[in-house]
Image 1 (cartoon, helix red, strand yellow):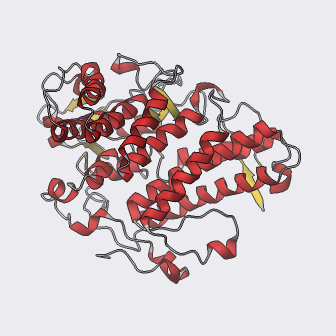
Image 2 (spheres, rainbow, N blue to C red; image 1 turned 135 degrees about the vertical axis):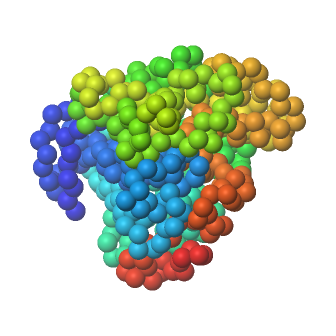
Length: 442
């Protein structure tokens, strides 16, 4: 087994790029950490979580109702909801995701076999790799439905994997995250919160439990983060996405000390019409009149006749010359809204409203007037729309998990019920018939 070691800022080492034998890598803490840093580099630059146009923040924004597409001469099958099994974006996301999973498994196997690493190094590296492995499987599960849960680097075994039922994949995710919680430290092992810690794992567990409908577990996992003194609430909306935000749980560091988030480069434009994407007009018109997120997190651009809006959570692009914004993957607001929904569904209406109002008040809005469990749950889901727009597909996944995807997107040209799942890549089905059958509609 060989690993490509990346010199990146996820670890504070100056290691030249090189390809090293896997056994050698995991006998030294510096190179072992560099191997894990290489996994984060892949996450940041390619695949599901990249802030570029090929990541979920853009593609699911187009696929649902957050973004409109402006490149008329370059068809976008995500925007038109016309995906097909041979579409290159589908194949690329699948391949890149399982490549990250493979790399995570290589770290797990490497540190487990190491004879030289300290137990502390083994624990945090394995915990991080388990965290990443579960995170990617979680997204794949909610995009493609039944998928293989891959836990080895064995090529022969992986070439014959079978899809697993959704419930079994979730059980695997929970088992891996439960182990990661025990392995990862409370504190961050690197500066600027770019390597996940125990709280990041609790944050992901809270989301997983929410999707599973395990309300008590979701609330408890969210509370484990919200009660952690590492994190304090930030009332200034303009500081939420700065690299030093006290509400950030986990983020990607840019690829140089003068770069900023990929999201800033993607979403910001300074003249119209937009070169690529802009916020959907229906989203813009749906903000409450006093919602300061519309003021601070979106920006209007006009040519004198028409007006467009772009996401402005990240305010710096490649021309800034100073690194002030990182790509935030997990942040405190999600934990408040997870706990609010979980509490509402359990009947803790006072606690649910307190958590929901924390988000509303920060946005300059009055307390919710929702009263019943159903009303509060609906209010939380509505709040998530305006809190998490253009962040990793939250909107699409919320509509899907609550059963209102079809009714919400019914008026979108090209939408059909089968679009709730993406097609499995044709090339993968040909290479491994065990992945059949194809998802319905493709």
